[in-house]
Structures are given as C-alpha cells and as structure tokens.
Image (cartoon, rainbow, N blue to C red; front, side, top):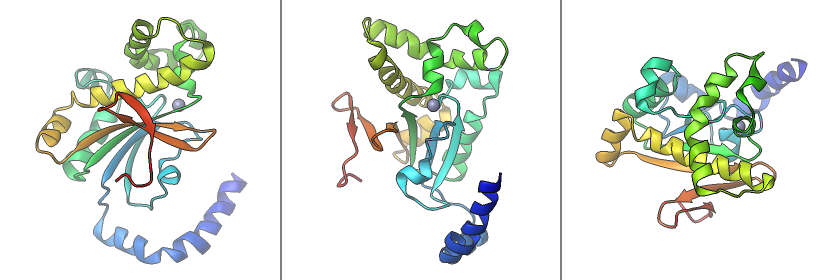
Length: 213
Ligand SMILES: [Zn+2]
C-alpha cells in the first residue's frame, strides 16, 4: 500500500497539477468518452497506458478473460457487461467499442484446465463457462496446436467471439445500424508492447500502424 500512497502524492503534485484544467472541465461538464474499452482484469494490461490517452477519454469495463456474454445470457447472470455497454452506447454515446485480449492471459490458460482444478474458488469455474464457445471454435478450426501456439490463438479467437457477442446487444445493433458505432477486436502482446487489430477484410490480426485512424 505504501507504493500507492506515495503514488497518490506524486499524482497530486505532478500529473494533477499539470492537468488541472482538464480535471476542472471533467468535474464541471461530466464525462464524454468516445470509446468503450472492454478488456481483461490482468494487472499488466492497462488501456489508458497502452493508448496513451487522458482521464475522460475511455469508458472501461474489465473482467477476467474480457468475456462479453451474449445478450440472451445477461439477464440470467447479471455480469455487469450489458449495463456498461448500454450506458456507454446510449448515455455516453461512444463511437467505438474495443474488445482487447492479450498474450499470456490466465483466463485463457485456465480454459485448458479441468474445472475441478478451481474447486476451492467456486466462482472461477462457472465464470470460465463464458469461454466454452471459444474452446469449441479453437478445437474445430485448429485441431493441431503446439502448446506455444495455443494460448495466443485461443486469446485471439476469444476476442473475436466476444466482438460477435456484442453484436447481439440491441443497443449495439441499433447504433451500428445508424452508423454511429463501430466494434473492434484488438490484441496486446505484453512482451513486445505491440497492439494488433483484427482486419475483417483480410481476416487476420495486424499491427496497428501509425498512419491509421
Ligand atoms: Zn487476461
């Protein structure tokens, strides 16, 4: 905790002082984020750091594995994702939703474990059910994967499926139909600091280049 407390002092002295006007505006006028970012709880994956933006720029939702259950499952399970999506799209009027997966994801690795491996932590096993479709897709499309390949490919397929699940939400479908919302699948490689995005035209993940919007 000491590290955090020292950090707060530094934040007040340096970052906050340098960005006083921004914080004043945010306090006075509220938030107007343009992007909803859905990513993993993993401590190494920080959307604000990766995209080098400022407070107020991203509306963020995180859970273990960056799962977005399909709309039909949300009322039963109350995962919180749907409420965040509805708020971001209808109230904040975000223009983009990014689902960001990442390398070395513990949730993705856990999909390969037997569920009784998590007997002592009774919420983890059921939560991982949200990855069942991902595993089914991986098994069907990549019958032979080396252990080195499988986690990266699974994490990428997972992000694509969560993007598809987002499109089952009525608010997302409506805003996309009206041309005011786009949904993206991204993947962060922790070791190289590279962010890849899925290109629907080419059907693959590609590094984001500087000249792209
Ligand atoms: Zn993760």
